[in-house]
Length: 144
Ligand code: DQA
Image (cartoon, rainbow, N blue to C red; front, side):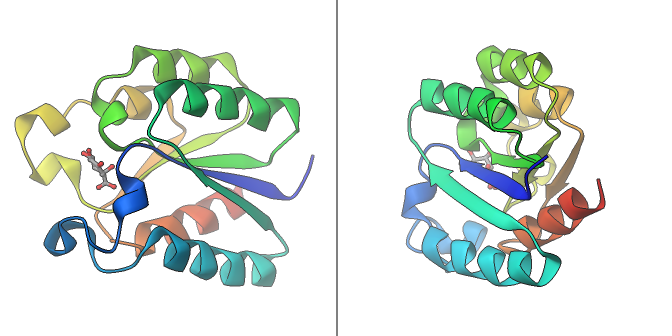
């Protein structure tokens, strides 16, 4: 098994830094990638971080995680979290552990964010700690 952790990000997360900073913080996705790479190096892991606004890309990358023997996937599916049976099916179709990640705490927000198809299939969920959610999820992936 490889030491690679896929970090997959869904729609609108390319706008981190300027998108509703009062909810999502001021770190950009590049800032988060840098933090993850620093921590991964200390843990002897490698990070492959990607972002897409297209649901099918996330499905393809989940398949790729399994095909390439990735150790785990950290998945922040953005709003697809709450809508995507395709992501639910992709997570259940692969053996690679998937950890659901959110910057905000969806359960403390609008009712439509309280359902998570990703969370129904994921190994576990880390949410509500801003950019720190990704670092905590990396630690969790390392312990698997
Ligand atoms: C999010 C939470 C989702 O409800 C929202 O649609 C996002 C970001 C988060 O990281 O807090 O796009 O996944």
